[in-house]
Image (cartoon, rainbow, N blue to C red; front, side, top):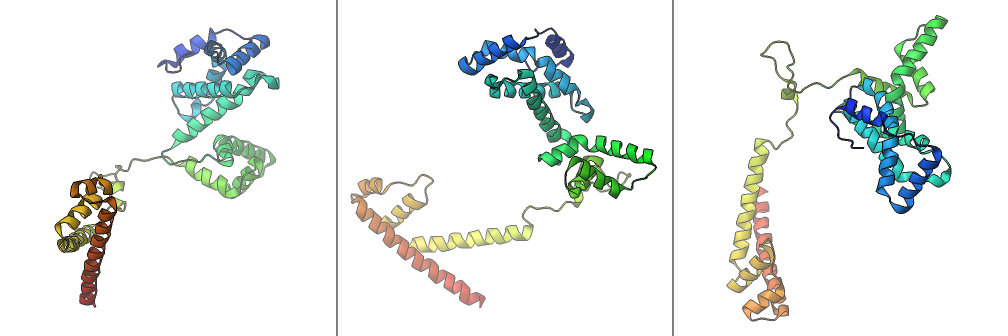
Length: 292
C-alpha cells in the first residue's frame, strides 16, 4: 500500500478493505520475506496490517500533527517491524509490530512538537506522552482525599509515579507549557516596537575585527612577496608550482621541465624554503622590535 496518499480518509478506506491474515498465512508470508526476500509477501503483510498502523496513528492526533503524516510514520514503523521480525520466535507479527509503530509515531511527534528539541531519552519520552495524564490522575486522587497539591508537590508525585528525576519533570513542564514564537514578533503592541530578533547578539565578525583581519592578511602577503623576491627564477618556479597551486605539481614533472632529477628538484625546493624562512623570521623580528 502506498504511504504518500494526500487524503488520509482514502488511505483508511483502502486499509479497511485489506485482507485479514490468519496466523498460518501470516507466518508463511513472514518466512517468505525473511528467507527469500519475496517483495510480494512483504507487500501483502504490510497491506494487511496497515489498518493497525492507522488505528495507532489516530491516537496521536491530539498532538497537532497532520493525520496523513502520522499515518506515514506509522507505515514506516510497520515496515521496520517487517524487516526485523523473526517468525521463529513464535510471536504474532501484529504483536511485534505494535512497538515499532508506536516508537516511529512518538519520535515523529517529538521531533515536530517544537522548533526547540524536546528530548529523546527514555525518561523524556515517557514524560512527554504521560505527563498531562499522570498530573490529571494525581490531582483527581488528591481532590477526592481533600488534600490540595501545590505545583512542587505535584511535580514530586509525578516524578515518583513515572520513575524519573524531579528536574526532568520540571524541565518538561516548562517546555510543554510554552510555545514557539516568531523572532519577527514585536516586543510591544505598537507598530514602532522592536522585533525580538533585534535583541539577539550578532555573532558575525564586527567591523573592527574585519579591519584587523584585512590588515593582517595584507601584511602577510607583503612578507611573502619579500621572501619570494630573494629567490632566483628556478627556485621561485619550484615554490609556486609546488606550494601555491590548487593542484601542486610533482617533483618528477618539474624535473622533466627543468631537465633535472627528482632529487635535485627536492634539494632546490628545500634550499628555497630555507631562504624564505630566514627572510620571514627577519621581518617578524623587525615588527616585534618596533612594537616593543
